[in-house]
Image (cartoon, rainbow, N blue to C red):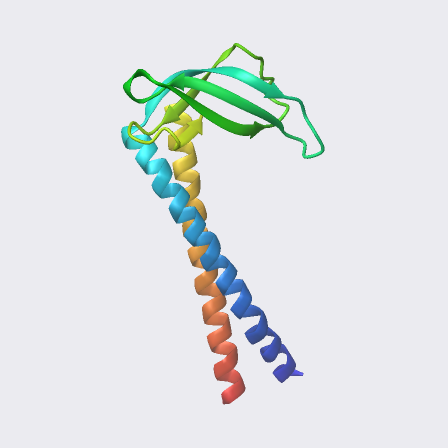
Length: 146
């Protein structure tokens, strides 16, 4: 009976550790993007120019226009939920990277900082979970060998 539990712990720990490492990698990339937006991002008031109503996915497709590099008009397409209500020709805050207008976050700089802290927390949590499952797998394999 003990061997069955140890084998199950060893088998479960491998995919759980790999999944935690994948989550950690994604959170690291997003935290890096949020750090760049937090340090050098430009807050602009973007105008909502296009709104496609909600379909089967539960999100609406919107297009924002805002002043980009060299005075050009930049566009940002995304999906939004029902709340808060979005109205065509209203302005909404966007933070974009000064040299890359495709790196955009919908919200204020305070929201960017909050999102950055959240992503860093996800990264730390995923690291702890990966360590836990790695140690669990190692201990169970060691116990099986002994």
